[in-house]
Length: 171
Image 1 (spheres, helix red, strand yellow):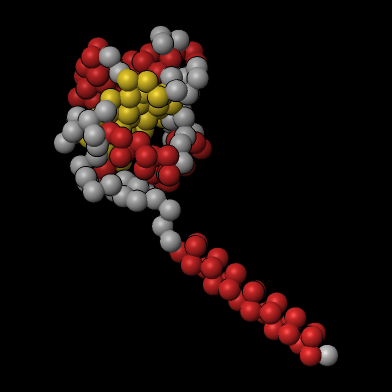
Image 2 (cartoon, rainbow, N blue to C red; image 1 turned 45 degrees about the vertical axis):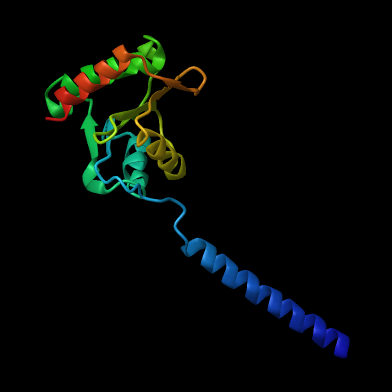
């Protein structure tokens, strides 16, 4: 009888420790906002794109919402082709001029303090975005190659293209 009581007590104690541990773990933030609050995220997509909407929502875990800009690419909604043209211009970089491969969202992170840039197509988790922000803050300019997902340094021409596109579409 005493052995059964010890077993039950031990089981309750283990359950309590696990419960407290799980509650503590779920309340700890898994992403960290960068110290540099000037970093900007530009998301090119369409309002009906679920991945675009998710990117916008989840990115706010690591970037202040005021620093996230959604750029609608559907000319029937915005009555201009400026954002669509920008989308394809940036898409040329990640797709090696095979824009038929790119999808939405197409994202750019820009740090005006370090001049770091990251460009990719598709949704990424907040934890990966936090890593990208840390890289960009060092002044690194990279893009994710659409064919293999490898992060690749930008050429000077790529950097100039991104800067020109951002100047046109974010006024």
